[in-house]
Length: 131
Image (cartoon, rainbow, N blue to C red; front, side):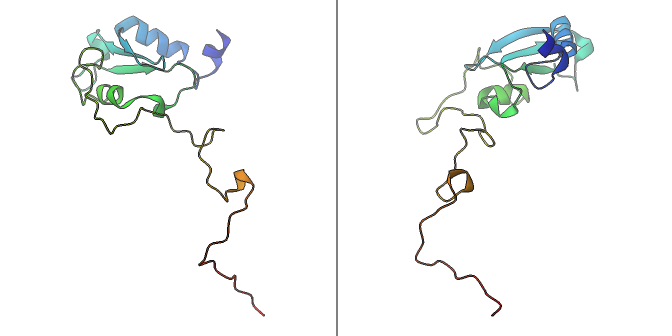
């Protein structure tokens, strides 16, 4: 409860939960537990369209929203993926959030995070020296 009162980056604030709870209905939930809502009350309409919200499961990071839900949130798709799933191609990979800045981020050989040593390449440069 205290986390919801004092933090905005984890889930949703009390004010957001009240607004969403008063005039919105739950439309669906994705595989990671994020919940998606749409307004039913006309006083919250935006540009003649119902407003759409996401309450993140855990840390609030927009890269955690999969493509099909992102399209629905931004009114690219009229129907949510729970009613009309997005067709997946054979070459598409599963959605992964942006891991930059986390311990799971990709670190190439030679990066400082992996020790800073890299193998010498055939075209390595020689640094300029003023002497």
